[in-house]
Amino acid sequence: MARTLTYKGYSARVEYSPEDEAIVGRVVGITDIVGFHGESVAEMVQSFHDAVDSYIMSFEAKDELPQKPYSGQVMFRIPPELHFRAASAAAAAGKSLNQWATEVIERAAA
Image 1 (tube, rainbow, N blue to C red):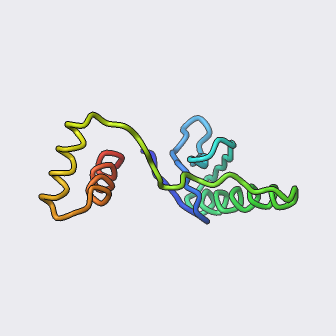
Image 2 (image 1 turned 30 degrees about the vertical axis):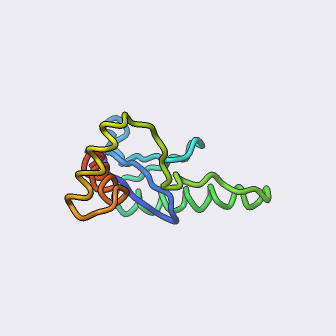
């Protein structure tokens, strides 16, 4: 079963690896590969924090900016009929289309 952790704005996906007999994870939302692991939950969480801190410091040492996770701004095209139905559903729920779509995507992504 996979879980998500967050630290300093970075998120990571973690899961148990029977082959490694450890909890392993990888920072998501960036193209750089930042991985970590631990034999216990506490060790894995500390390893995640250390990996993010090290990732950030490696860029600071080069006077560069590390990649940031997704901005939260999404733009995509949908058919006009779907746009109308989504806006109508949002209005019926008393929400903006943005609020409504955020909730729908959150449920779908869970």
